[in-house]
Length: 243
Image (cartoon, rainbow, N blue to C red):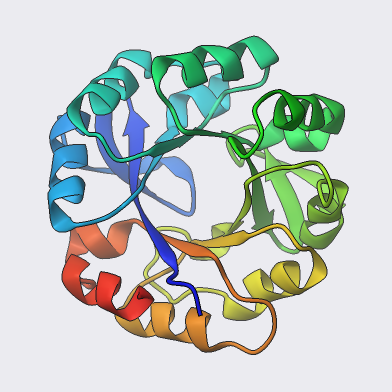
């Protein structure tokens, strides 16, 4: 079985590295005032990718933490996937030209799926789709609004589009260290052939073990956020469990 790729998360709010609780911008904990420093730490820990989210951008609908992202790109050589506020082909292009390895599209995947498919054709294997789920439906606009589409239905839209991955987040667990929703993520993974990355609630190495052990389609990756910052997961243990 292929190793699961782990993505330590750097969530940017006003240029700083924070974690939110359930996606609530008013419940932000600052863990590092320097995003570049945090990126370097994760690279030194041995992670092979970074997951970066522009929180302000997700709500504003355009990139807002550009300087901090550029500092991350300059600080590390490992690949970076970036989401939050990218809603146009021009936005995708500018980030790929800046050195982002994979651009994550969320709100636009619900509102304008054709744009996502076009982006995936233009930049094969460099587009990921964020499937952010609350109460069974996909959330949009920085998780501030709910659509009427289910996670599986949204995922199936991009079955043959050439997207690199689907990032499935259980918002009710995000930042809460309550354990990952193996069943919810697995349901999407079983429904499509696109690689699925689990996000939200990963609290311990057991969560990584459980994701790997589930029957059905393999889970390609997992995003680690608060668990790393709070110390409930040690990087070396996580990487070993994912291998």
